[in-house]
Length: 224
Length: 211
Image: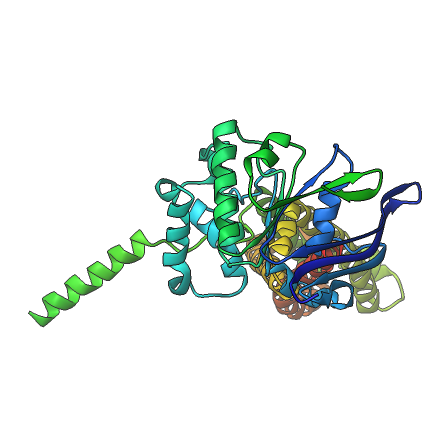
């Protein structure tokens, strides 16, 4: 268990009496690993990510994050787990009334950190994702690829141990998806665990080294 | 020279402040819904203060004086009834308006919780913004209401004098003046309380849903 960042133990999840999503699945994610979760639409990729990010609690079974059972953490303390996880949404979810800089700095503001302590980090990160020219731009003026890169920067800013990405290239073109995958690979090289949910086989083939593919099929999982 | 330096320094500071604007509020509080809510509460508090203060004058009609029951007792009972009815309507409008306005920010709240905002962080920001709306609109509404009432007062008195005898009216206007000052404070406090409570209950429900 020591090298595992996340572990699912006999997890069973159902949305309704007639709709089971997972049947007693057990799975471990090692620190520094690069994982892909695949499966057809509606197979439960997003649900699995929600379970891993502690946004959803399983109907049965346990989810461990850094050895701690998430089920035993009280609701008003769950934010401590969420702060250690970077989440990237398919639809970016940048706040429209905040600038790119403010959107990226948002996780740090939520932790009541002072701007003078993080300002240079945010600027540096924005230049890492090639968004130094859009620091004061609002999300509505950015392209799809730029918005997704801003969302990636927001997920990375608080140096999380784990990054979960739900269809990160679902709304961007080929060249942008390559750039995004390059960013993920760089983050992985720095030691961050990456878990990407996607049904895009091209994307999986782009990440060549040390990747592991988890396929969801008929309420069960298969490791490829 | 020193003064000149100081002036230059202050102007420099000013220009720096302009270059680095104040960071935007994480949860926007100047949305269209909030503005509508503000206008609605101001209007309601305005009408409420006019209604409740001028109501004392209305009960001085000849029908009341002809009855053997104590005039002031009836006045107080009917005042309490009307006040609670108005309060009920206001509470409903404030609760509905606050609820709609928070639900409009549903996605923002969901995102903040996803990014690791603590429950108290979200609750504090939302409840405080609605507390401000309730208090400020309550003060504006009631102050405007009292100004209107004082402008209208001589005309109302003249109308009442035509219908009533003068000695009764003096007693009634004296009674109303104490109510006026109580209402001046009570209306903003009530609207602030209603806004705070309804926003707290709504945001707590949303947090439970997303956590």
